Length: 291
Length: 308
Image (cartoon, rainbow over all chains, first blue to last red; front, side, top):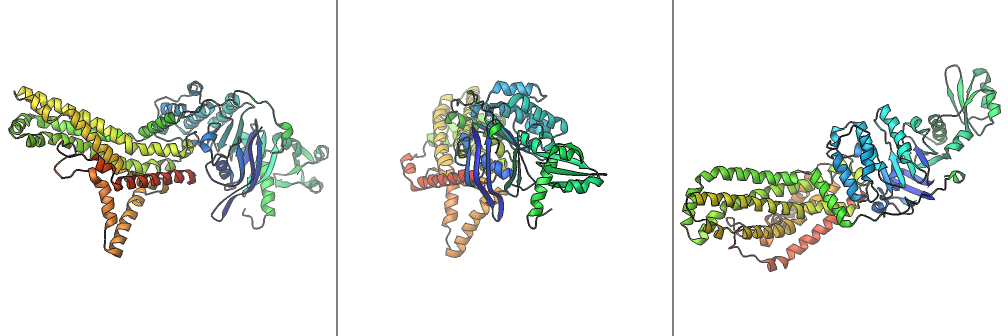
């Protein structure tokens, strides 16, 4: 089943084009990472999907038009925008009461269960909690909602490493199953690498890369090449090259593994390296691209 | 996504069955409760006003017997005036606190959620912008008047009990006091005044403030007041008239059901209530139509305003 389908999605703010004809399709049961530089249109794309902003083009989320039916859509969609958006005056108990009051798919016992594992007190106000605890609270609320699509926009921004790790662990262990779909945007790509099933890069309002993680692993290879073999390696047309200490690392798309192994140590690229290669290639091919 | 081969076809039935949607009344109830959690001044301010007044009243009750004796010597009409005065002041204190809280609340109601970005949390829940705005409008138009009414009624009843105790203690007639100051009549007259003047007649003021609050990025107070002043000044300069200023003043003053004289309070039973006149006044319906337009604009603004 298709959870999100967008065709020719466009959105501009004055003369700035935030989304420049985005086409995308997300199937049920996937965990999609939407990665892009600042101002690439990530948040605008998510806002369109969540019905927070009007757009041009075609967009269906769970079969609904998000702009026209945001409130209905939100019965099946949850989102965490970043850790700072829970109102500071809200008490933990009030948050539970309110979501329980307005959300038909909220399971209060489940949320209480998640909270019991933390040190968060029911009577505390959000302003009294640490940033990590606010994230735990928000996650507890969201995980207790039986939603079909969860959208996370920089969910771990400003959290320390322990909370960040915990965040994705509980999401995978206590929430995700194959009937749910998750979209996550983040700058901390290394920590979602093992979580994702699909990867998308967005740059200047366009999807420039769209691939499942299985495909990423089979298609892309990185080789650390010693200087004496660099000419031979370059002849195989790497998509990106970066200099290390004493050797260069070359990234290949659909190259022969055997052939590469002769040049040096072969390994799978990290998302970050792949991102730099893809976006870098985009930037150099685009005229007057900013660095 | 080009991953059709990888798609896992395992639809679970549990998430396909939609639970019964939350009824609109329940959504509305929780939205109003949310407002009271955030803006506790809505009930604290009128309660504090009543508390301060009661404290003053209790302290002054040492002279009460003397004043009562003087009042009971007057004729019925003047008796009422004399006796009712502190009760009217009590109502006035609570009304003033309610008015200030209502104005402040409306300016904050839609701006603060954008300022702290919590609007993204509220919008992540299945509550429409219309429900949200109507719940926020209900605070100054329904909740605050009803709260003011209950607080005033309880306060006045407490005052009446103190008065009676003092009278009984000094051997004066309690019956006359209760005949002149029927608590039920005072309470009903106050309710009528609050509904007609504070809710219905002043509704456009609150509607305007809510709309400005949804619109202004900052300095909502200036956006709410400066354009109104500017229109008044331009009208004065261009046409030498001041219809606009008088119209705005009239909204605050209370229109056809407001106090007819400065010294007679709306709880005065001698004041003639004219609900027919009020309900048939064009100003009322025009005001309500303008309020509706402001609220529709506020709903649209909340929907279209970029959340980030």
